[in-house]
Each structure stands twice: as C-alpha cells, then as structure tokens.
Image (cartoon, rainbow, N blue to C red):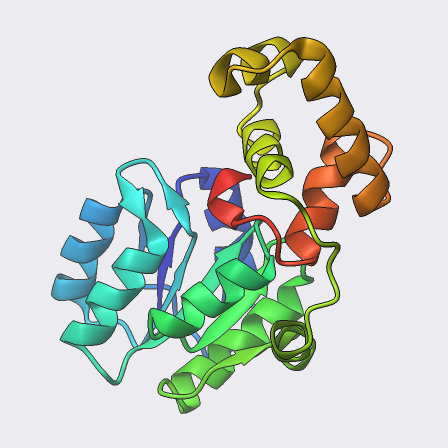
Length: 207
C-alpha cells in the first residue's frame, strides 16, 4: 500500500491504522504527485490511498493516471472536501472508493479492503444519496448573479472585493449575499458554502 498526502501527521495516522490490520503492509509514503508517480512505478502497490489537494497537482488527476497505467490497482480517494461534485469526480477518475477525512479509521481500512478486492468497482458511504440528489435536485434556485456571488464568497472574497469584481455597488452585493443566505438557510459565509456544497450548487474546487 502507498499513502499519498502532503500532511505527515495524516500519513502517520493512516500508517498506524493499516499496520494494525494484518491484511495490509504500507510500502511507501508520498507528499506530492511527482513522488507518488515515482513510488507507484517502483513499488507496484496493490492499493493507493490519496488526497485530492496536493502541492504540485490534483489527486484526482493522479488517480486517473494511475488507473490508466494499472487497471488492477485499488485507488482510495481520501479528502476533506466530500461534496457530491468531488464524489462524482472521483468516480469519473477511476477511483475504487471515496472516503471523507472525517470518517473513522476503520471506514478507511474497509474502503482499502474493497479497493484491493475489486479495484474496478466504486464505493462511497454517501453514493446512493448522492445519486438521488443528482437525479432529483432539491437545492434552491439561484439567479446567475447569485451564483457568481456564491463562487466569489467561496474563494474568500469580501463584499468590497466582490463589488469591484462584478462592477456593482456594495449595497447591491450585500443584497445578493443576504438573499443567498436566506435561500441556503445560512447565517454566515461558512454555513452558506457548506449548504451550497451539500446541495450541489458549488464545485468543491472553490472551497
């Protein structure tokens, strides 16, 4: 097994979790895409557990690369951004499993076991619900301007910066933000972003 995450503490935690299971042996760790590609080529791991956001690239693109090179490798996407968009992106990239970093370690181990046994099939704890949400969208309907404001809020911009970016007054921007909060049932920026992710209104790459 190869662990790919740019945070050493997370890799250490994963290593301890897998070393408690006799079915797994961690053969390498990487903190970047380049290191992961090199180690995967040298070590031929049966399973790769990888983060999405890496310093020199995207873990989903790495998963796609690894899947193209080795159809038999198990690929577990482990990410703190566990919205529907990220889940379906992992599925499209050829991942075997998708697990949020908030999940308990035994869930990560179970995902890796699935990936090792059936690398070509996909599992995720929220898969059925995500499919239902995609087929039956229930999220609030936003205007084009509200969607623009939402994206900029997610990028960390304040009211003044959004106003300059969209060439509108600050009072107009505040009105759009207020309407967004009402539609999303949110009291602040963080709640609005999380609600938008859950509703499939916001791409995880903006978070």
